[in-house]
Amino acid sequence: MVTRTLTADTIVQALARRPEIAGWTLTRRRRHGTQLYVIGRDVENTREVTTEDFTITVFHDHPWPVGRETGTAGHARGVSSVKLVPGDTAHLESRLDEVIMMASLVHNPAYELPSPETLPNVALSDPLITALDGTRRAVWEMAEEVWEACDREASTGVRLSAGEFFVTVSDREFRTSKGIHASSETTHVAVEIALLARGASDDPTLEAETFRPVEARRVVDLRLASQVAEASRFARDTLRAQPTETRDGPVVVSGSALPPFFDPFVFHSGAQAAYMKLSRFTPDHSVFGDHAMTGDPLHVSSHALRPFGLSSHSFDGDGVPGRDTDMIVGGTLFARHATSRYAQYLGVPVTGEPGAVVVRAGTTPLVELLRDPGSPVVEIVAFSSPNVDDITGDVGCEIRLGYEHLPNGEVRPIKGGALAGNVFDAFASVRFSQETQEALISGFGGGGLYVGPRGARFEGMRVAGG
Image 1: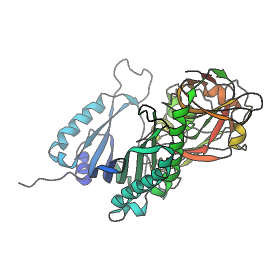
Image 2: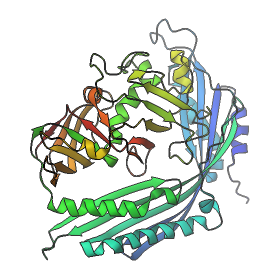
Image 3: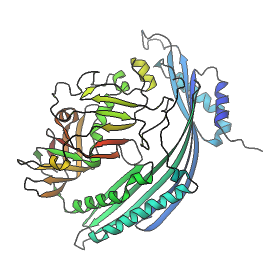
Image 4: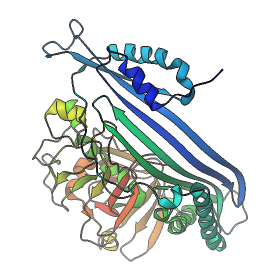
């Protein structure tokens, strides 16, 4: 008995036999990667992982249910998706039956799939990784760089507790019923390390642990040596940090703690938020409402064409070409980022899915933002868990590590307590550092790239003691 393997061609042929489908998209993904897990310098496990799957999305047009969407012209459009693997050949027809039935139960205003366009050429893969045995070499290269960096920190009482290293090559093929047929190859490298710092005492309970997740498309962009050095300093400072005191005054948020503060601005700049009546922004109006902008001008853009950017792409999940889009210019909403569906709903230009969040830097050195002749300046470099509400802009983030910069130049590490405020209020008078950084927007395993100021100084946020 010959077992057939599911392919993109067989799926397309099966979809073509279904006249009840109004449209479809098909994404085939192949991934090959190497994973390495270590405890200190001891190798716990290594893995070679190869996967392939197919995501089928179908669209079903049907009349509006009685009493639903009264006054909406035309038909309703339903959408549903199903994921299959190569061994699902025998189940293809039944799975299509299921996904079509599910789409028939969904009632959205009608919209069309995009037509084919010329796609940009965006560098998304590292040839050193895609070469023969490249994932294996890269994963050990990352481990060796971390081990050597940790050896340099050993004399300060910091050691590597555990590390996880991932290198993946992904091949994506995308087809639609509108005739789009595109492909892309990407590489992804990720490291998560846990460092332990021990004080001068032999008491084993006097330890502080710091986690550091890092992701990129190329090993060179991880900058592992500097990541280990900074994480080691944070671990040592956490060990001697004092409890945070309640205070009102200037606060600087810097490093990886800063990117989540821009999430609400990206959310409210989106066409989907506007369609759902959630966006507080109006085109050509200030994003700060009644607050006068007295700080540095806020410029926020989406860059989908940035070479080797984590959230860069030559085409998005609808087949729309990647684009760079200015969203907020000088504190005013300039344009909304809009996928094909929500662009049609609002009648705005299609920009596709967002790319890297790029924020214009300021003109003040970070060291100047940390100085104040009249009061201490609190700098926060790490939160236990960022909690910035996309809709309201409210901030309530527990402080994992920060520093109190005193007027006399003394710097003291602090921990505990929380930062509270609202980004839409605080950013009206923000001052950005002239130094920039590239950092993850969300945590390990996830999301996009932030490119912007390394630090931001706020005058209107409150530090609550722990």
